[in-house]
Image 1 (cartoon, one colour):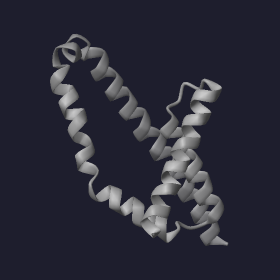
Image 2 (cartoon, one colour):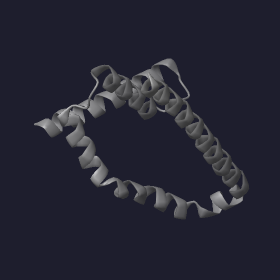
Image 3 (cartoon, one colour):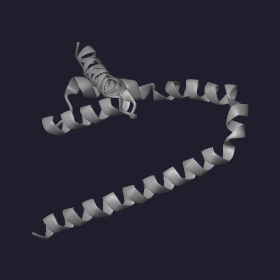
Image 4 (spheres, one colour):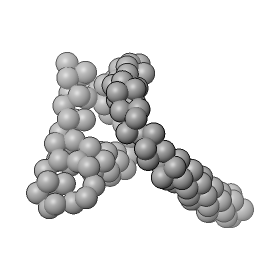
Length: 120
């Protein structure tokens, strides 16, 4: 029963995200909005319910299987990807660099706040 409750919570968040994305015409995918809803809910609750933890760990155990369709898509559309290889490479490099820089800045900011609390 806990596994069903955890999966229901995950699917409910994804469903709400899809409703918001399609209903409001947002350019953000529904599952991304659903993950934000889940994050906000977990921050409000303050901990991860056991049923949600059980469902999440079960999904993570088989996460590698989710890469199979992506790999098949790469092989099936190899020529199409080859035509736009440089824009794809530049986009990947720039987005990775921006993500690393923002993550580093956020980590520095969080560490400064943590040091201030420790000094008090």
